[in-house]
Image (cartoon, rainbow, N blue to C red; front, side, top):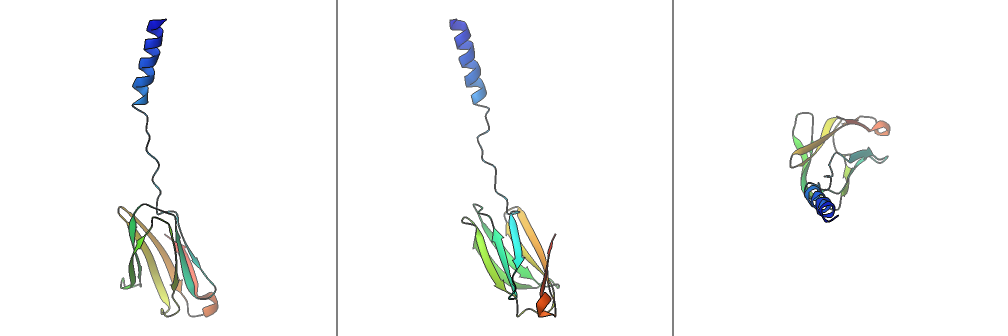
Length: 119
């Protein structure tokens, strides 16, 4: 009985040290970009324990907006793009080894001002 008890205790102690106790990492891929009816874009990002670099580039790759953002509490940021000319733009969020890019098109007709594409 004593040997069986010691064997069980040894097995429990031996397997317990191999348990994986890490929590899964939250990805910035949990990001949404939505258009509003008043020529604005709203970016939503789930909380991530890091900072990120947020930028908007035009079709030529020129940055029209760049900012460093804290993502620990998530992010809900609105962009007024009514002053941007018609064309294709990319909103990019970089955090360490992850990069999320959302493409949007500003059109000439204000009633159909945006098209958001996930790449």
